[in-house]
Image (cartoon, rainbow, N blue to C red; front, side, top):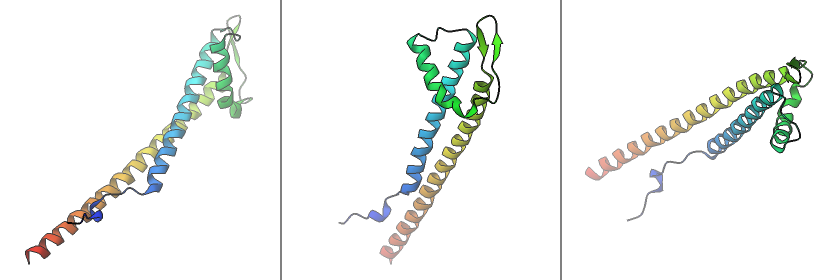
Length: 136
């Protein structure tokens, strides 16, 4: 008996690829938000910038902060620390971007589920048609 490949549910490649891309972008934004939050904390409490961890955080967060540099001036906190207002603004903007990617992922998943459901209905209709033709 031959196998029937028409009963196999296939998700369009563009949906799978777009979901992977959306997840990658979502992860990129999460890394940015985390590095910016760490930056704000370390700057506020005057962390030693020569330590490897602090240097890593500053370098990582600098790439995420570049589009927002110069919008707001930093505010001094205490004697040596300061509050990076631009980094806080960047965090807020990146959180909105994260929300957008989250919505995009949910939309793509909805389209995948809808495609699967439609294909399941088609398969069930074909199987009913086959069983009717066999009974006649």
